[in-house]
Length: 327
Ligand code: SF4
Ligand code: MG
Image (cartoon, rainbow, N blue to C red; front, side, top):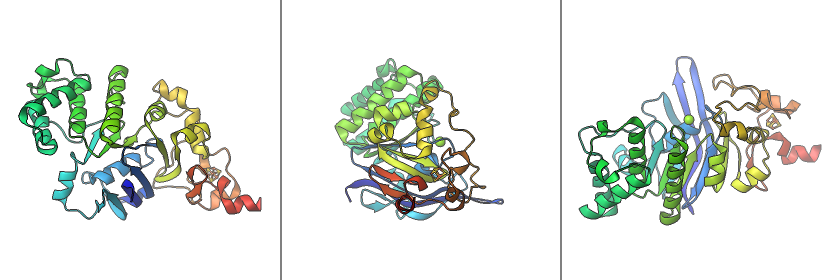
């Protein structure tokens, strides 16, 4: 396949005494080499669980992948051994999370931790690797990078450590970078710098990027294509141009209407009334029906399929070919 990543019908469910929560419920997403795909939706729609599934980092959660495949570079990641997966993580696939999943080793100097990986994976000699690390630290906005490189993690502030983690994620030139709200906690100047660095990686190394974000401004600036998720499923997919210019799904329209508020860092999407349904108490039909201004009778009875559409994919009875014919 021409895709670097093919997530097919992924189902990641959470099991508890109260029952099963279908956090990710049949999601298919593809990303080509050098492509940036945004994944958007409110909190609790399954975006982060999707990314953790790709990384196979569900161990600390009640989540379990129950169906689907995750093809990366010709391999089903769900079939590889834990050891092989560890080698893929951080090298071919790197990640940036708002709250770092991995932490820096407190007993090693900052630079040494990144440099060893760089020597190993980019086959740089010590001198070139050290310079590369300094350049990376510099490009994520770390002042005095040539000194910080020889400091220990505890000598840095939390914000600085997060930037070090970002530099580390990008230092080995991964084929795929998964970024989950990568810049949310950072100030705007640093945020812009990190996004610039991601763009550079994409342009120079053809790194593919899966970018999970609440910020549609960031999506507009960074993404080629956008996948909109709601209640554990994909509800719309389109090129970034088509999505902003001509959104189809009522949920996407609601998200776009709330852009100005989101840019002011208001977390709640004011213009969509109501809340994301609790995943253990989902509506029978379309999961968005309780909040949808266009809901029809059928919407309450039957869930629409995700169908191909002239500008991508859409899951909504308004665009169902059979229904449209009948009306
Ligand atoms: Fe709204 Fe019906 Fe479309 Fe769901 S299927 S988004 S309720 S119009
Ligand atoms: Mg999240």
